[in-house]
Length: 266
Ligand code: SF4
Ligand code: SF4
Image 1 (cartoon, rainbow, N blue to C red):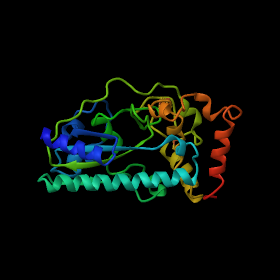
Image 2: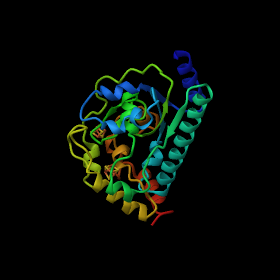
Image 3: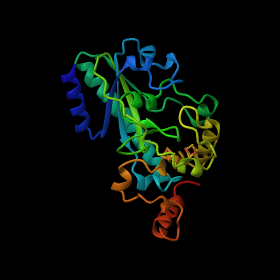
Image 4: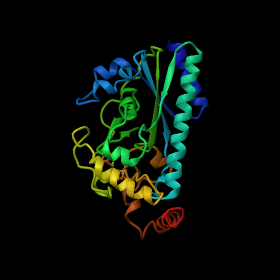
C-alpha cells in the first residue's frame, strides 16, 4: 500500500497539485480536539467501505484575492472549485482502476449561499479532513491554515477503500492570533476565541455573501486575504500588515484593486 500511495502522490505532482495528504478513517474516531464532527459526518459513515481519505489542496493566489470583492476573485474561486472536483474525480477513478474502489466528494456540497444560511453545514468537512491528513491547523478565522499558503487554499477529498498509511499531523499551531481576520471581517462574523470555541457567526457570513452574490462578486474572502500565515506572502512580496490599510504608501495597489472592483459586478 505504501508503493501505491507513492504512485498516487507522484500523480498529484504531475497534475500540479501542490498539497496532498492522507488520513486513515480511524482518525475521525480519535480527533486531536473535541467537539469534532458528529459521527454521521465521518467518511466511514458516508461510505462504509472507506479505509482512508485523500485530501488535496489548490492555492488561491494572493494578488487576485486582494481585489475581493470582485469578479476577478469570484471567477478564480469558481475555477479552483471546478479543478478540485475534476482532480478528485480523476484520482478516484485512478485508484478504482487499480482495484481500490474510490469516490470523489464535491468541494462545497451545498446548492447556494441561501441553503448554507438556513443549514450551515455540508455533509462532509474538507477542512477537518485536511487537518487529519496533516495539511494544517485551524485558525481563529475558522479556516485551515497551511504552511505554504496559509488559509489561501481550497480543499477537495476522495474516499478510498485502499488502506493507505496516514501522514503525520502538523504539530503546534500555525495561527499567530494576530486577530487581523477578526478586525477586518466586514460582517463582524468572527470572534477572538480559538477554533472550535470561536465558531464563525455563519448566518452573518452567509448574509454578507448572499448580498455579494446578488452583485455577482461573491465570495468575500477578506479573512483569508489578511492572514499573515503562509509562505505565499513572501512569494508574492506581501509581508507588511499595513499593505491593506495604508493607502497612501501602497497607492498603486489600492488603485489597481479599485479598478478591478469597478467592472463585471454591480
Ligand atoms: S468570508 Fe468575509 S464575512 Fe465571512 S467570516 Fe470571512 S471576512 Fe467575515
Ligand atoms: S489572521 Fe491572525 S488570528 Fe486570524 S487566522 Fe490568521 S493568524 Fe490567526
